[in-house]
Length: 117
Image (cartoon, rainbow, N blue to C red; front, side, top):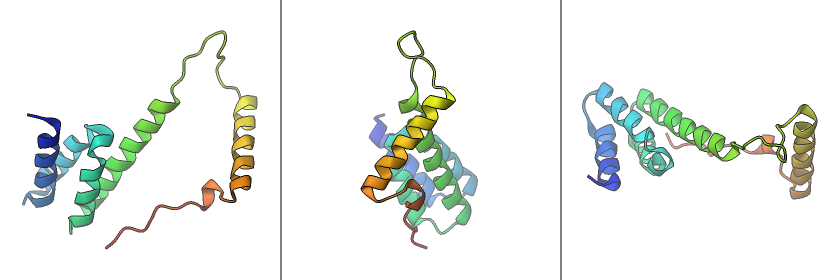
C-alpha cells in the first residue's frame, strides 16, 4: 500500500471512528510518518468535536515539529567544528536578537494562530 493511501485511511479512521481509542491509535500511527502527516493531523484537528482528539493531534504535530527541528540542528563535532560553548551560544543569541531588531519582530512576539472552535 502506498504512503498516501495509508495516510488517507489513517486520517479517515481518526476522523470518523466511533472508538476514541481507535482514533488516538490512528493519530499516533499518523505521527510516525513525520512531517508528511502534518496536513492530515491538521485536518483532523479542525474537524473533530472531541477535545481529547484535538489535544492528541496538537501534541502529535508539536512532536513532529520538535523532531524535525532537532534533526536539522544535529551537527558533528570535529577538530574544525568544535562543540558549542556558552560563549558561542551567547554570541549566536546576540546575533539572533540583532537580526530580530533589524527586522522589527522579536521571536517572543510571534504567536501561533488561534485555532477555530
